[in-house]
Amino acid sequence: MSGEDRVPTLEELRRELDALGMVAVPFRDEIHIRRSTLEYIKVRVDDGVLRCEPWIGFFSQAKSTWLLLAIEMVILWSLQAQRLPLNAGLAMAFAGILGFGLHGLRYTLAEVTIGRVQSAWLELRARQRMAQLPSPSSSSSPPGTPALAEGDGPISEVSAHMRRKTPV
Image (cartoon, rainbow, N blue to C red; front, side, top):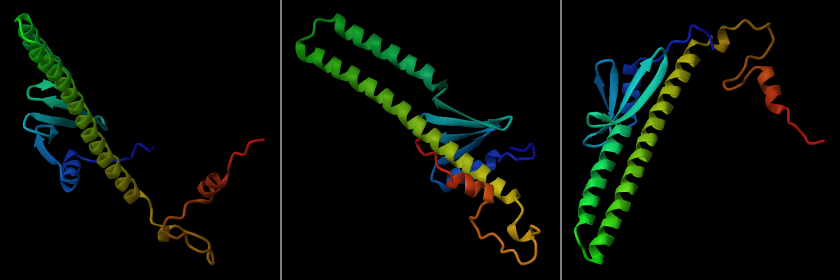
């Protein structure tokens, strides 16, 4: 990787994410990918490195998960302190399992969104690198030598691809 590689801007990434159907909103020196009412992914570039953080409201996803789990624990504990019939106990157990599942779903969807953002970022970088390469027609090849067709790689790449390790 050369030091001349240009890193895509957040505006280019935002346009790419908009084209993918994501709601990307510019905010100061970062963009926010909206997921639901209070959930979003903060995306920024620090020294050429893409950084993605899931947030819920004013807290990071990890802090808000701990806060929500604490609230759920207090509610379930207060309900358990009362003498309730068996049906209420089963309802509390169901609510606890449902809450655990929703937290897992929230984390999974955040990771899927971050994966899509990273894929768009890598695609932008690859396009920029390809745009910086010299075109095959501008390369000086000896007269009478066929030019490389699109998709053809150098011989070293082709031979490395052709080599196979065979068991002895």
